[in-house]
Image (cartoon, rainbow, N blue to C red; front, side):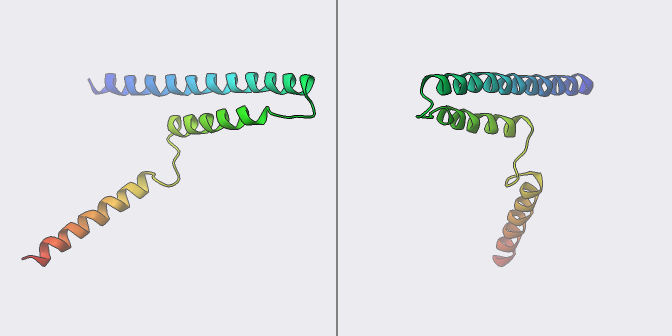
Length: 97
């Protein structure tokens, strides 16, 4: 039973990674096309960086969620906060004894 759950979790993670790389490839292809279109049609007015920036932020957020990268609220931070709140709760309970 546990092996099956582990397999399903691993399968879901691989699927998410695959979707991220598909998203990244689509981004690179479309933004490349927009750059070419922009340079050929109006080289004096560059606008391609606006969609690149907006979509790029989405790509970064997608990557952070897929690869579980969050430098601010990672597992260590979570553990520290849990310990902090447990200690505060203990101090509060001891205060009223």
